[in-house]
Image (cartoon, rainbow, N blue to C red; front, side):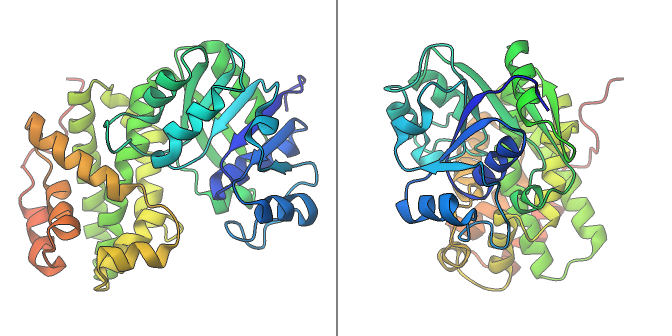
Length: 339
């Protein structure tokens, strides 16, 4: 636990935003969780719970919530952005009115802006140019984190002081915070893995075996790495928590929203029905569209993306596509060997 007491705001009262807010409160810092709905704010403040997103989890009595954005971020040292990718720019634009230059702003959103194809750190850099930007990503299923199960994450930035601050702020007995410098790679990995979680959920619904799922995950890692290298990321980043760690957990756990969407697709639902049954944002749906457009434009070989795109956006049946998704893969196994 840090000896310094920070003033912190978390923007977004979903499952992950609430979970990290609770850690910050437990660590003794001054924390305010910004939530849009006043009923949710009242529940956090009076009942110390967020039943919509974290049922049966008791929150710290020192965690305070507010629906007033200006009040929530007033005089903050650190702000965590935990809203979905679609509203991120608009919320950041509102934040610009209230926060001081030099404030640390950390994105935890694992998505890409649909209209611009920009990562959230790039969006924040445009809307909050005088702030210090970092990204946090890893195998961080919110419900397990809220239940205080041992979890690791990566905070990435070129700013070593920012990394140290976030480590001091969040590190505790069950949450280990590792540092990294490849901000782009860490953030890209967090966004891309959502697409493959949909594919993995789809395969699970079709009762594929463990061998199949293992092959799917490793080939997904190869596709992610190919794409990332073309976009300028370090492929070695994908061997860490933000890459293979996050990919594994989201491709194997029903706690993953994108996995659950894929599972519903595999059971015969349409994409609209699958998303509606989830009741939350599944970032992989929009990311899939962007990856397909970019991989076509750049000539990147991505059979898993192509196959899932045909199911989600072109209306082809799962049975038509699923075999070709694997058999069209090229023969080379490891593409980025050191020798």
